Length: 459
Image (cartoon, rainbow, N blue to C red):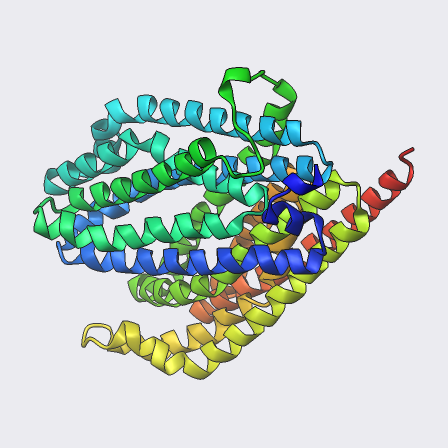
């Protein structure tokens, strides 16, 4: 059996510190490339004018639903696979991979069938009309129609991550983002498809990535898990295991989007549209600072899941704490850079005559909001550990408590009730995150101690 282990599986079963580093590195690179793609994509679409940007903005909530479900189920499947690998149960790891793909297939079909016929009614009810309505419906039909491809691609990378093969997951993600960057101007301007071209570029690039996944998983077959639907046996317990992590993970993704909507309302009340301009600009940079943590989170989920499956609490604890230390070091470096470069970063968003008046406020926002980052590893990686051990509801609670409750509460308290205005909101976001991260970290430690007692009582 030992000689059949892939390099990724050997990494998962080996030293937890090395595993976190090896699994996180490729994911950090892949996510930085994806962040770059999001920026470039916006630049290409911006060239079409405000109607195109409005259409993309209107479709964004629906797109978030699709991506949140895809990412969530991918995390649920990845966690289940890693736990089975830790338990050295290859048959159940294979079954977990097959069930994850099946769930993704069903969700993709249901989303397309439920959304596609009603897109015009949905966006009309929101208030879209004229050219914007036509653009968002045309754009949406392509991506909603291709929901199965979008979801399957995300789930396939989740399967690779689950068996510790984050390098190939990275190759797939970089290929998709790179193709999208390359195809955007061709479809939008060369083929003169406008905003619809952006949708076709996205779907085409992800389709090519999906073909690569099909080759790896079903043709080349050099992955640790074997996916064979000819001998597939439905297992309700595996379905529950995947969904227990996957569904809360999806809701956690959506809760972060909901938080941004609520914060925007609070900010408008305190600082008007200029406040939104300052927050949106500063938050883009702050969110870039979180990208490395997203990669580390994937490593922590896989390592803690494998350790949990092996009933090795010491390895689980080491992987969890090492991930947090790694994250804090990275975020500390980012904090220093943002504080030092705040005027230069501000200039990127305020070089025009129409925006120069918010430059000073934006510098202050950077130097306040950046303190959000050092506490994030405690909360985010505790959530990842909960996903690893299959406690998806706890992972959701951590995210919900941090975003919807703490950040919104403190922002409203300092910005509106205590009338500190925009600076109060910035520090409210920071304090809310620090408070939630502290409580989450304590909860994570108590959970580990509880697991330690439970594992000791096992025969």
